[in-house]
Length: 142
Image (cartoon, rainbow, N blue to C red; front, side):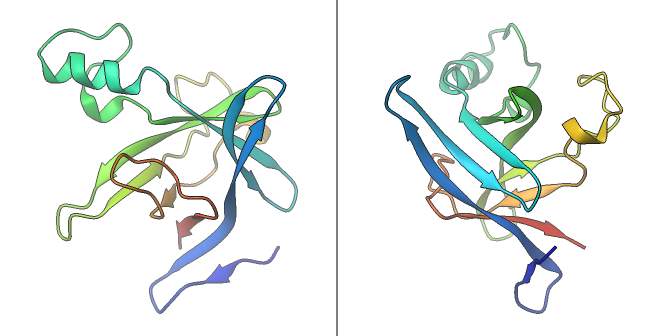
């Protein structure tokens, strides 16, 4: 498996994300291609509504806080394997997406490594609304 090291810190590029559009179904998504797997990132169409509800003090049907509302849902072979959560680095005010490890998590109800995110990933190539830029790097740290 070939990974690209970035700088002197221990971040490693796992793959690059490509914007895809299927005209027949009118579906937009981002594809991550690993050596043996492909992930599809679909934007959460209810993200803005859920964040607005929680910021106004209303209860959301699915989320307790703004920090738990995912911007993207990640699928592999038509099965949900994870989520991408928007975050902001408090030190230098940099926006990024955080993809948490889901192996053995309660919400996934499986210990199958084939359908789990096995490490924490990060995406820094995004705009101010947490939209992924085409060709963004999916990083992990060692």
